[in-house]
Amino acid sequence: MGIVERTVEAVVEDGKAQGLLLLPDGDGPFPLVLFFMDALGLRPAMTEMGRRLAEAGYAVLEPDLYWRSAPVAPFDWATCWSDEAERGRLFGLMNAIHKDQVMADARALIGAIDDPRVRKTRIGAVGYCMGGRMTMFAAADLADLIAAAASIHGGGLVRDAAVSPHRGAPAMKAALYIGVADEDNSCTPADCEVLEAALRDAGVRYQLELNPGARHGYAVPDAPVYQREAAERHWERVLALFAAELR
Image (cartoon, rainbow, N blue to C red):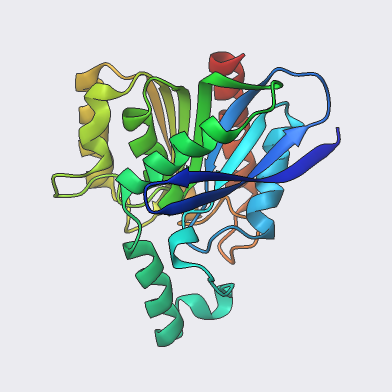
């Protein structure tokens, strides 16, 4: 299946949000999936993953969460965590993101898609690492749109703060899949207990799956911690979820 890539822009309160739309050839309609990038930003690995979703018959929108900080030089996995300057640059970008802005950007970018082959109701969302947290926020803040959401090795899903993804559970209407690495300080077993309790109390349909031997970032193909077995498992779960809830 051929995939068309195009840039999407939308005017928001403080500028122009940007994203990448990956659209299959054909007549559609193609259910829309929001794809939230990891901390290293939009790059070929994210496009490759988005294309895999598009090849399964979905229109995939990848918002650029760093557009307010542009231009952003590419990161190198070999230095982004070990080099002090690069680590500081990465965390500076991550800390500059505010979930209300990301949600407003997502709504605006969805609205800016004018291709009639894209079905913009009952949509999906998937995100990785930092994007996994944004997926959980979206399941609550965009509950009128999102019917299925997948958070893959998401970090910070439970925080001791007024704004934390798990606190949005009562607003969620989507079915969730949450893939967790068992070697991940950003999503500990204690965090999972709190998250599951919140989802159960809110009556959210969900599956939380622990991936043995996997580390934070296991599903991203350019990451040094990429684990093929866990990555392929996440694709099975995500595609099954979207097929059940979006078709």
